Length: 473
Image (cartoon, rainbow, N blue to C red):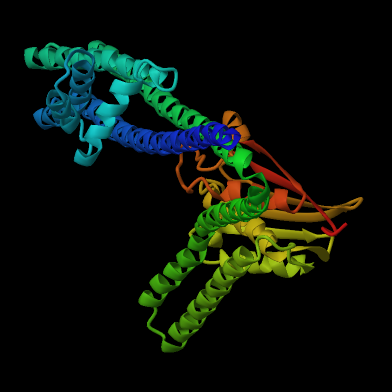
């Protein structure tokens, strides 16, 4: 009798434990599915915003051209682009007042959203438009709709005045100023919308991590209550596997980030190669053409070696840095040679002052640093200056190697200086991809160094780098 009572007590406990485990697993599946759909919808919104932003900028551009030229085709172009903005507005209005998804999709299609994204866009709004995750973003959408109304009214005002043929220069200036103000407001709202969506995405992922940890702990605890002795070994094994998986994920993420970033630097030799091809096309002397082919081969070989260096470095990312004695003069010459066929190289006077012959460091990262900074000096040289300079100074300061790369190029605006090392940041000139200086900063950090920049518009830029003379110390 006592045994039967024990069984009655024991079996419900088992069912309860498995019920909790089943509930936790189901919650994890549902939670992860919902999160994946949220992130997918978030991507759809960001993609749609880019289409919206392009249409808005095109509409403003065509309206300005219409004001200047009175050409009817620009008015038609303006109307075509404003339909995209009106489509987004229609979709927003229908989302708020109409349960019929088809009417919402009409607006989204007009706004150039992809067909496969429409359901996710509608789902995210209906489920989360009033939550703290995305309420800010949807509020900005509403603000954009108000601006679209202003732009539409302003467009009608322009059209009516031009048809009436009574648009004076003063009125033109006033209208253009109004258009510019609306465009600036649009830009701010669009940027804030993207930031808000990204912020919501990060919050979602954070909640997912905490929820996963919570439910996993419940599952582990429940199983551990009944199978404590057996689960002890299993948990130790699981922890070891999890640690290895986490390390593998981190290594893969770092590898992807590094390869993606350094691919920016692979373009410089290709530019040199294009220059050689163009020169060879215009050359009639066979001997000279062969010389150009030799230079092409040399450039390709250097590029091949650089790629091999990146692959080797990526494969050994988790091992110690590859330290070696670096000949700084040779390293600089190689970097200059790699950029030797850039567009502005012939007009640039190069001065080198090498006070230190060698340092112990990672050769690959030093190549990245010099290649990027020298390439920038070429790209941002000032063609209006009679004498264009690039000055490379290397000196010793206690146990540090001080590298100073100075040019008298176009310079960097003061407000942009704090942001030049951010990933994908580019100046208004849009000459580069916005990765070069970010890669340089990352390489300097790995080498336990620092990098700073000072600049004046039309005067030039100075990059100052401090690196240990001996990385190992």
